[in-house]
Length: 383
Image (cartoon, rainbow, N blue to C red):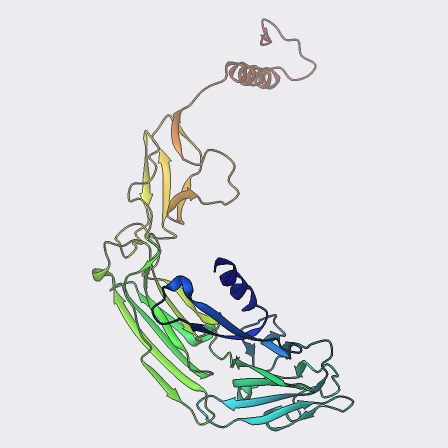
C-alpha cells in the first residue's frame, strides 16, 4: 500500500490520471483496492507566461506619454510545435469589449490596427515584441497576447499604464506669513492622467511619521479625459509649537506604479538658533532681532562682538545663525569658530625693537649728517 501511494504522487507531476477506490463489503481499510487509468499526453503545448514592458526611461511598470516603449510576450513551445500567429487584443479600462490591435504571422509584415495604427514599428520581425514609437494615454488598458500554434493556443494578460506627467513642482505655491506664522500651501494641476490618489499630510521629521492626512480638495475629469486637481491647506504655529521639525509632504500617486510627484515643504521655516549665543568673556555682543516662529533667532540672524578696554578679540567678529547653529560669517573661516576676548600680550623683543627705532629717529633729527654725535649711546637690543 505504501508503495502504491508513492507511485501515485510521482505520476501526478508527469501525467493526467484518474483513480477510483474499491472497498469490499465488510472489509477493513487495509483491503482497499486502487484502480488508476493513466493518460500520458503526447507532448506539451505552447505556454504563454507573461507580458513585460520596457519604456524608454527603463521603467517596467509604466510608460510616460511621448516616449518609446516595447511590449514583450514571453512564451515557450514544444520542439515539434510551430507558431502560426501572435495576436494582441486590447480592452479599454472599464470596457467589456476587446479589439484586435496587432497581428504577427510568419513571412508577413505585422498588421497594426486601432490604437496602434501608425504608432508602432511594423518593420519589426520579432513575433513576441511590439515596438511602440510614442506611448499615448489612449493605449492605457488591458492587453492579451494570444499565441496560436499548429497544436493549440495560449494567452496571458497585462495592464499597461501610460502616464501624462503634467504635475511638476511649478504647480505648487507656498506662502509663510512671519507676522502671524501662518503657512499656506496651494496646488493647481491640469492635465494629469490617469486619475491619481493623494498621499498628503503633516510629517514629523524627527520620528519619520505622518501626524495628519490631507486629501485633494477637488478632482475634475476634463473633456480630453485628463484630470484637474486642486488643494489648499493652511497651518498655524500655535497648533504645532511642540514640534520643531515638521513638513508638509504631498504626492500624486498612480496606483500600481512607482510613479509619484509632489513636494516636501518645511512648515514655518527653520526652528532657529540658541537664544544665548557663544559668550566672548570680558566683552559684549549685539544680536539682530529676526525671530523664528518658535521665538528663537532665525536663519540669517547675526551677532556682532566687541571687547572691553585692554582686551583684544580673538576669533570671528560676527556669527550668523545657519542651519540651527551659530557659525562664523565667512564660510571659509579657518580659525577658532567662537569669538573670545583676551588680555593684550606684549612681546619684549618687539618693545625693544620699537624703542631702538625711536632712538635712532630722534638722534637723526638732533644731529644731521656731518655733525659729531656726543654723549649719545644707542643701545642695541640683545638677541
